[in-house]
Image (cartoon, rainbow, N blue to C red; front, side):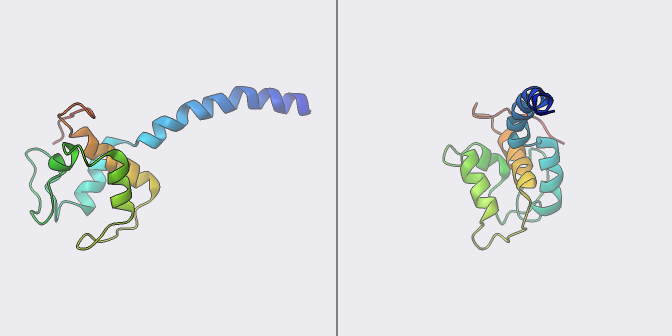
Length: 115
């Protein structure tokens, strides 16, 4: 019984660990959905999109070398006024950050057109 359990763990555990980084990187398309719902009243969230002008456009954030992935995640997790705290889940923050980073045209991320 113990041998079978160990054998099963040896098969399943590497697959789970291999999948973890992909999940941690976030889903940019889900991030766009989140941005449309929570962010577009204050930010312009993409190219050729309308939005508020009370906060920096996402494209500017994505292309600012000081706004690293870690910086963005920490800011979203612990915002400072006037940005409200939306209490997003860790997954939502990963997705939103992935979307913002997808707007990077400077090579730090992958620039992806979003409509």
